[in-house]
Structures are given as structure tokens and as C-alpha cells.
Image (cartoon, rainbow, N blue to C red; front, side, top):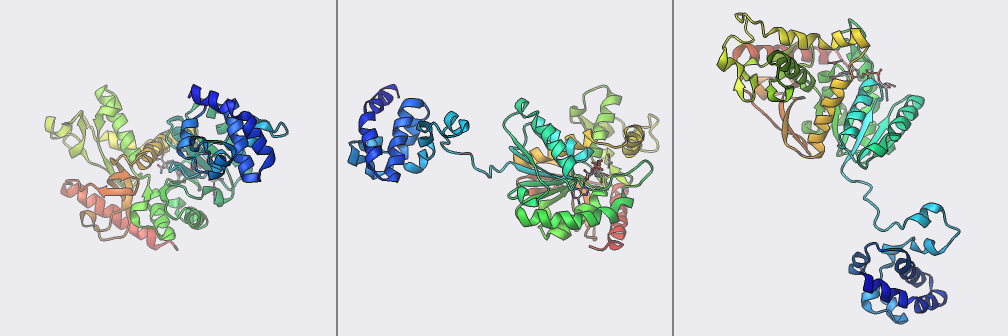
Length: 413
Ligand SMILES: NC(=O)C1=CN([C@@H]2O[C@H](COP(=O)(O)OP(=O)(O)OC[C@H]3O[C@@H](n4cnc5c(N)ncnc54)[C@H](O)[C@@H]3O)[C@@H](O)[C@H]2O)C=CC1
Ligand SMILES: CC(=O)C(=O)O
């Protein structure tokens, strides 16, 4: 590299002569050789692999020194003192692809949207985060606030816009926009209002990112995941509700508290509807692979003297408890969504309880979205795990499907 740079510097007089005498494209190529030789130790060898400009030979430059003009466009500015500082500081050599595959949009910058954003950013999951909200002041404020922390995370771009064109080419669109529950409100009571909001949002996301995956968080999440599926016209694998991933995580936390271990080694699925009628699968609950029911078959049943089933009641009551205490829930769902986002962007093929179209699964006849363990990757839901459910669990799941179907029938999509 050093020898080569030395040789290039020796060529400078010839190059300058050529620059003055010749046409614009050649000028650009040659003056780039000049500035490159003087200013940079950056990848000259890389440049030479791509050299193509045959005109260089006219000026006594050997084929090895030919430099493709397009690779070096902009470097002329380095010899032009009238150019902006940015161009004096840097030569745009090979700009990153605008569509890196890691572009994520979040619509709705309330408590939940921002918790999703900070969880995704701080874990370096997305390379590009686009924030959308209908409130322009909130949008600008939240965007600036996040941008001011970007020096402390791995390279990621964050920008906000009220226009959906900014979301174009998103790999994943997370929707948290909508009316939240107040104390005492049920999730299902939000359905009519949030459906109207979805009628506005979903077609716009689809217009600009027709290949995206939709991850729905707004409540009632199962009904709205169904709505997003209908409104988008997407195949079902590309519409996911955050579902009972949060409920399962709450369950694992509570198990860990009782067992006095960390949540990551406690396993247990909560399936069905996110919220009040969710279903705990006690038969699968385990500590580091040891099933609780293999140790005590009464766990989670009415005969259980230790009352482990209380944990599920606590899961069901969690949201209202937090809403009463702080007004809203945010961190748990933010981290849950970040985990789902990572699985999709990294094509991890890991399993999560998320809301998906379950028609035909476990003999469910209704076209409803409910949570079951799903494998997630870059196609969205790649597989649904067919759990071994006992008759009571199956009956609960069928009841869930029926009640969701009734709610859907009362809505106008
Ligand atoms: N699935 C889950 O596990 C959870 C779901 N949620 C749900 O998430 C939703 C959001 O909750 P929060 O963030 O607490 O509410 P919030 O009121 O703090 O934020 C909602 C945001 O949506 C925006 N918005 C409303 N309509 C919009 C539209 N048409 N276009 C763009 N932006 C719009 C608002 O301007 C606001 O910034 C609620 O439905 C809530 O029930 C909340 C926690 C957990
Ligand atoms: C609000 C809500 O759905 C939750 O935190 O579970």
C-alpha cells in the first residue's frame, strides 16, 4: 500500500496536466487519483479491483491505476476549498445500502411505542428505526430525545415522520397506536375505536412496505391482529399479534419468584387470548427442563395445596394492577416486542407465544387470531407448535376462539 501511494504521488504532475486539459469525466477520475493519493490511506486496493476507466491510459496511467469514476465521485471536492466541511472531512466511497434489511417502523409513540423503541435501540436490534405518530409535537420531541442517545448505542438511524412514505421498505412494522385502557376498562372495550384507527394506519403501511411483517400490539391485540390481517390482505404468516408473549413472560417471572431462581430458567406457556381468558399450560411448566407436574402432579390443579394456580390469576391481574399504580404498562411489553423483533430480523427461528391465525389448529373452526407457540423468523410465523393439550385446555382454547369470533362479528372491517 505504501509503495503504491508513493507511486501515485509521483504521478501527480501528469495527472494535474490531464485534469486541466481533458473532459469532465476524465477530469473527475484523474483528480480523484490525485486527491486519493494525497489524502487517504483508505482502501485503494479495493478501488483498483473495480477500475475500468480506459481513458486513464491516455495520460500514462497503467491499467493498474485506472479508477472507475463512479467509485470516486465526490472526491474532487477535496481539492475544492469552497465545498462544505462534511465533504472536506469525508469522501463518500461506497455508501451503505438504504435498505439494510433492518428497517423497523413503530406507529404510535405513546408509552408502549416508546418502550418498544428504547428496548429495540438499546439492544442494537434494528439498523433503522422510523417513528410515526399523528401528533407532530410528540413525534418530534420523542424522536429528538431518542436521537440524543444514539452516541451510546451501536450504529442505528432514528427518524420520525408523520408521512408514511418514510416507512417505505420496512422489514417490520410495529403498531402500538390507539386508545389505551384506563383503570377498570377491559381490553375488548377498546376494539371499535382502535379498529377505526387501524383502518387509517394499516393500508398506509402496506402501501409503502408491501413485503413487511406487521406486529400488532394495540389492544385488544388478538382482535386487532385479525383486523390488520383483513385490512392488509397479507398472508397470515406476516401478521402477528404480540399476544401472550407478555403473559408468558409475567408467568415465568412469577414462577421464578416462587422458586427463587432467575426467570430465564423457568418455562411455561400462557396461550389463547391476551388477558383475562388466557390459558396456562401447567403440563409444560418446568424448571430447567424438569416438569413441575412430574414432581407433583397436583401443580396448577384445584387439589394443589400450594396453590400454584394463583400465579396465573396474578398474570391476569397484572395489567390492571400496574395501570392502577402508574397509569399504563410499558416496560414489559417493550421488552417482549424487542425479543420478537430480534427473532424476526435475525431469522432466529425461536419459539414465542404470539397471536396468529389459528383456524384449523387444535380443531378450531373460527378464523380468529389467538396465541399459541410459534416459530418466528424472517418470514414472520414459520411454524406453529402443536402442543399436547389436555381436554380442559382444549375446551378453554375453543371457548376463547368462540368469544373472539363473536366480538369480530360485531365489528365492521
Ligand atoms: N398487547 C399488549 O400486551 C399491550 C398493549 N397495549 C396497548 O397499546 C396501545 C397503546 O398504549 P399506550 O402507548 O399506553 O397509549 P398512549 O395513549 O400512551 O399512546 C398511543 C399513541 O398512539 C398515537 N396515535 C393514536 N392514533 C394514531 C393514529 N391514527 N396514527 C398514528 N398515531 C396514533 C397517539 O398520538 C399516542 O401517541 C393501547 O391500545 C394499549 O392497550 C399496552 C400494553 C400492553
Ligand atoms: C395493557 C396490557 O394489555 C398489558 O399490559 O397486558
